[in-house]
Image (tube, rainbow over all chains, first blue to last red; front, side):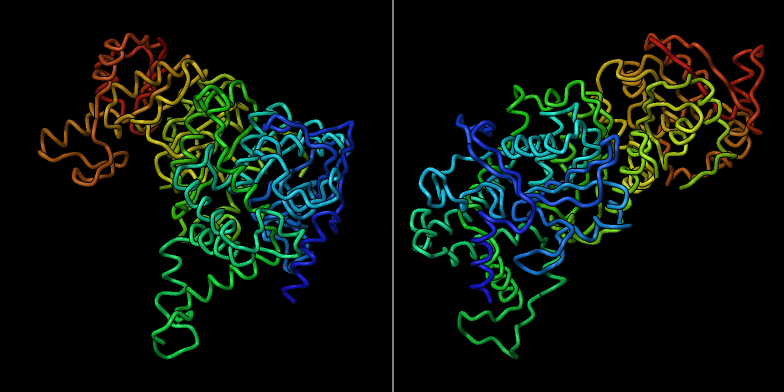
Length: 389
Length: 204
């Protein structure tokens, strides 16, 4: 079963089960690394239909290990879309009303060009031959997809975590193409602590002998142990101490007493091992390296002379930022500094901090206050945009 | 604490001072009553700053553009003359440094509108003079030990502060206990005695 899923993941890299848009040599993707990526492709999903004025499009940006399957059953895992609680017919983001687009990021592994994709120059997977990808590169590619739909201005761009970074980059790079922006649980830069956690994950992957210097696919292998450890470490940062304690405490896993060994005695160990194991079936290890690097490199202020407010100078985009009290990966202060920059730029901005003990991952969960904020923000933006209810 | 519109005559006075389609920053927006009123009746481009997270979340859920923040510390993040009007309604007396806050309002807005409860009202004077107790009235319902209002002033005090800050009073309105405007022809001492609340339109 796991092997089947892993094979499916390998397959999706070149031949995704979602629609895919290919860009030939005439339309290369200009990368921040200073090179061109060509040819390349973007795998995406859409929901709902574009209105005649092309004014009802919402772009959803996915997080580190997300994908384009935001509101449909995932072809690899068979699970519901990762934001189906929010997006769908008659949901908060109502696909009867809005045209929702979600694309796999460049550097990802579910169909957009990434390290697991076949390098046309060699006929082998790119592996580490793919140039380093940045958040801005991802957004540049998304803009080309949006062009393809003939959409001049997106009604809204939203996303959490790495998705939120893309939202901020969209607003900074294409202010005239973003009517409203909803960055959730994110920051304008990756903190030292966040880079540190990512580095632990990358070292775990690269320490796995099955990684083969990044060429594991050529050897018919996958660095599963290393990637699982990376996921286990990262997963802790997505939760909170309080939530872990509430869910697991020091409870033992299927046993009455400690075994005086290194089995998963505790439920939390068993849970983390499960998280690690299921992750490796659905995700490419090199992709994990590339995407964590993209997040580490993200520093929106540095791209604008060190002053974050300058990234948003003259913007007319309406912003709503959301943070969670127990998120220690992107604490509220990160959102607040973006809010201050937007204030200084004279932007229209709302900012909601939601009280929850569910940590960073709260943005993916059924959080009534989050939904109320999104609903209020989208509703007022839709009125301002002249979209009928 | 939600206050219904009928009880807040001062909000109508504030609304009357603001022309349609102005850019307005409401400092201390509470649950968004004033911003909503301004959007409905004046189609303003409105923003809010509110201390309580609960108030902010309520505002945003209602489609208002509000952020969590503290008038004492967060006004410095706003650009000079970024707004046509900055409104501080019934909040001045709860700030730690009213002088700095007022100075910031005059920097951020082309005009500032400030409303506050008048501590010079005869009921307040009466309570102190005759009863020897800190006043607890309909508009000032807190006891001295749990009040968020730490810097009360009278209308006369406020006029003095405006002078100190180089602010010009373009318009001033006092409301009596029934929420009725006190006649313009009345002298300052009269306003200061019978005005329960005051609304000032300032510029610098």
